[in-house]
Amino acid sequence: LEKKFLRAQRMETVGTLAGGVAHDLNNMLTPIMMSVTLLKEDEDDESRLRDLSNIEMSAARGAAMVRQLLTFARGADGGHMPVDIGLVAKDVQKIARDTFPKNIDFRFEGPENLWKVQADPTQLHQVLVNLCINARDAMPGGGVLSLSLTHVVLDEVYSDMNPEAAPGPYVHIVVEDTGTGMPPEVLDRMFEPFFTTKEVGQGTGLGLSTVHSIILQHGGFIHVYSEEGKGTKFKVYLPAIASSADSEEVALAQTQLPRGR
Ligand code: ADP
Image: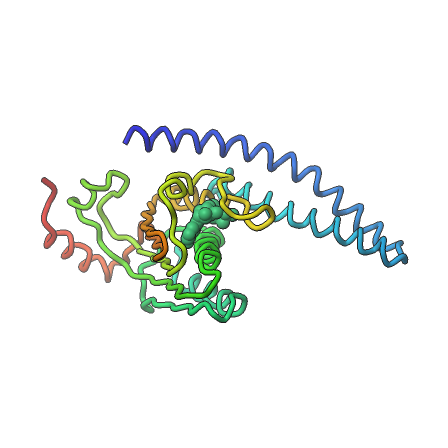
């Protein structure tokens, strides 16, 4: 537990640092992008236009990375509202079906009346997209990517074993792939900002640290199971708002489950 706490504290420091860097970078990228746009308007020479477009593209990539950094550092001060993750997931499913290689078999499973979560929908979208992109990248030869949603009530026994989990209703998101899996040294470091095993230009190393910080800011937690050569499973739990119609189900589940030791 102490080790976990230390890691959380270190991530917080890196987050503050990253926020500062992102802010400064943003201040530099904005005039670059504006100037390039102006220069392009007055330029007729084709090779110069190509150079300018390259500068523009790199600056835009930098700006996208800064945006991710800011989300990671700033935390969830965006508007929180009751969100149906099923709808968010359907949108992610569409993106994946439209843009992922055809050798990736994308499977989606989610009930219609999932409990809602109090959340920033844009950030939840980012969580699902980041997890799906990693799953895609882990299956260069193709495979199965499944995204499934359910809701569960965590009881006190479960909470005793998982100190980060308060008992209560949760939405449970599972993103599973049949890809490369992760060796222990990668599993150990995957949530660290800027940790990546991907080639330069392929990965920023910010995907999972962003996921981790968004989940924590929403009061949730995340478990990872991975086996080299077999695949990886990310299980995300987000506290849910069970409506009054559901509360009987919650109360029942809580009384039926054995109480803590
Ligand atoms: P990036 O994707 O930019 O490298 P992330 O923070 O999203 O950054 O991931 C960090 C590292 O964790 C990846 O470089 C990869 O080695 C590993 N990883 C993440 N998700 C998976 C996965 N589903 N399967 C195998 N390895 C993964």
